Image (cartoon, rainbow, N blue to C red; front, side, top):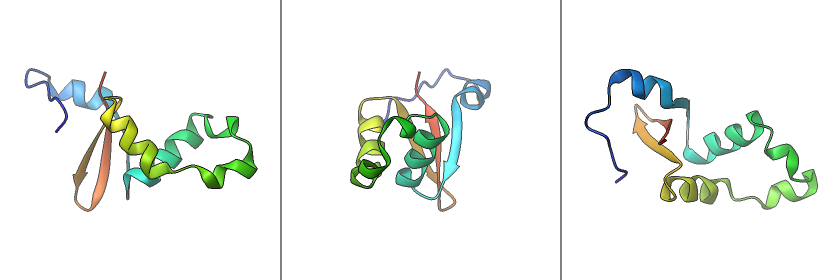
Length: 79
């Protein structure tokens, strides 16, 4: 489980909220597309990207925190 700051306030959660998606994989694709990072990868190579693994790696390295709620995934920046 990710480290949760028990002293953080609701405003911290609001400030760090990044979005909601059906799966971490879907969110990662949307995030890369919206931030322009996907454009850095030639289109012919994009089918080789493993968005689920990228989401997992981002969670494990502490960049993002994924919360499953109501059948969807809510994503927060951890720092």
